Image (cartoon, rainbow, N blue to C red; front, side):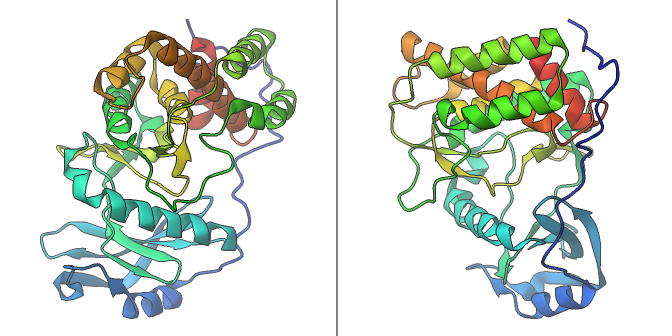
Length: 321
């Protein structure tokens, strides 16, 4: 069905980044680079450092700096936490990417490799390209199929000691109040609001996840998938929300990439967790995934205008529920 259009798109919640309480400038980056601690087997002498670090991006949690390249031409980026609350997220990402490094080559999508770390900073290769929210419908579907198989590869028993994210991979009922508050805030057209409520209701009513905690990406939405320039790989980035939990949490993000049936079928065919072949267990997971998809879509519309890339992703998700 065609994407609905807000008759008067609400602008109260424009995508304004939260204030940075860790102000990082070029001089700070040079100090960080001088104090980097390389990962085992990484030789910083193999890096051609840029004479003038340049900030090339800024998100909710981190700033991204162009700091040079490997001598084979691979560009490098230094991610630095811009908020005190993001320091723990970046630390979690570093831990998880270290754990995933031995099997990264077996995943259908590339993931960041940690080359060195500093205080609230991580050095890794930069994936040239654009995020999938800026892609065509065909590119989004292509990326979603890769993501489905990548999530299946990630969804293995979570390692002990990994902190639990309180808002990802948890029972849906724990997010009930937040969902309904956000639904009121965004003022969706009646049809979309009804779709969101029904998907949420069915997800909450579905049996809870009773399998062991699986390792989740935590935030696999289109802006965290990089479509490659040229022949490079598609990449899944931003592991700061990684958590142990219910795989349906990640599947809700997968549903932002296109029609549910083919994406979920691709995931199920590749997943190996106990119960994925049981129709009752799988059916409950799909219901919870649709609930998560509604949650993520409504939350995005509190922060992004309906005609922004992620706003359009959210509206498309709701229209397909």
